[in-house]
Image (cartoon, rainbow, N blue to C red; front, side):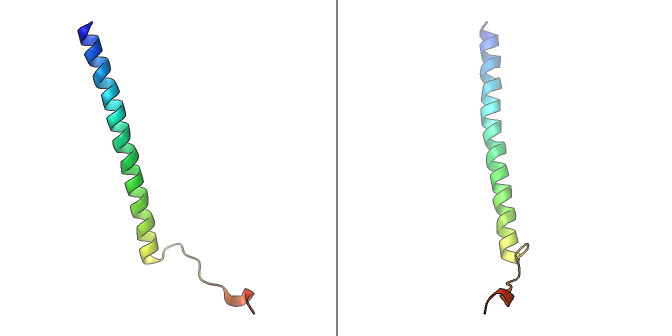
Length: 53
């Protein structure tokens, strides 16, 4: 019974910590991509002044 408790504890620990690492890693990668796009102007629309007087 003690072994089963240890297994359950480590499985839950791994899921929670691993999930946190994956989540924050994904956020870090996403933010890095966005900052790189902003720095190099990738994906920005050129200003269109034909609509103004």
